Image 1 (tube, rainbow, N blue to C red):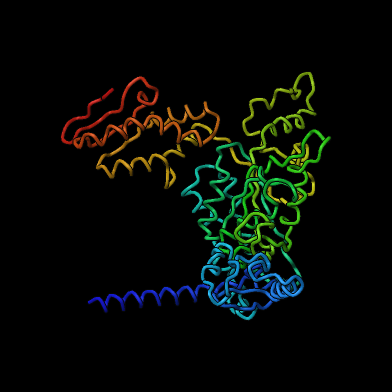
Image 2 (cartoon, rainbow, N blue to C red):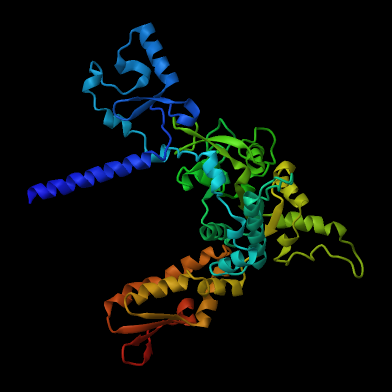
Length: 477
């Protein structure tokens, strides 16, 4: 019996070893010293323990030993124990020091690429189908969903199309403008999930010009590579969403260098237009002694989004230039109560806000999202597949309790959210507040079968209606 167990353990170990070897064959060899992959450093020299060293590092090591007579313990900074024979070392510990997140997948040969195209035009969902899928998760914003569906469809048609006829389709990056809580980030996340493409979400507030504290500009591409599991070919057809893009506006004061505003905009120009860049694998900085991967951003779709506070004032100022006095004249306060004023935004307004013309020119598709009103907030509460109300209904259903929100209660929640002026983000905090006591008290009594949330309970003037199993509904305080 013991022998059979030992055999089964040995078979499992061999199976894991074979799987690991097959998995390693999909990745490039990386130099243990300089961390460059085989595609950059050339053919590697293998030493015991599955350690790979490039020719340059090996030559420098021997030159250093020959000139200074240093022992192997000090050669090239390798972590060799002092006064130890190389034959006595455990090289396996050294080979495991390169984590998987810093390994680069091998590129497919050209013949294999041509035989199997990554994108087939016929397999790309049509814009109306993309819009239908977005409707299941995103409420409202019909114009924004229409624009982004057409833009993504045309982008991936461009990726799959050939330019044998000499006509090359240019890339159409997008700029989303909308108040906080209007669903900019959620829209992009849902889109990437439906299309099954790698998505990287970067925050523009952390980007600075190279050489200063903060993330490098190329770090947004490095995040996309990590989302694609270090597969360069898959990352080159992904989507990068840069949030808070309005924080990169030029600063009003010009007395000091604008390293986080205009400089970052200029650095992003080459990425948006399409260029070949080297990005670190498994890190945000190129100085982290990690492999560098070469990525072509020509087929990466960039979507930028921002709330652009006070942009409506710039739009009003432009529209009020034609204001005059007298009968049938346009008054200066004509647009003061217009909640959809951002729909009239133009490139001139963005330039006055602080975006440089070269940056705006590389974002040809500009569209706005509607601010949340009461009706939209009510729909957000109950219509999406993963609506907040449906989540709580599922939680109580696990306790065999039915949870019901009446229409007046939903309107009361929406009215409270409007006062917070943070869009759909306010809904969750409001519901968490009044659902705390219910989620705490309901599991105490197994006889409770139904809970109805009323407007009085939301406003604090009454309580929910609780129904016991087999009895009539009774209001509770």
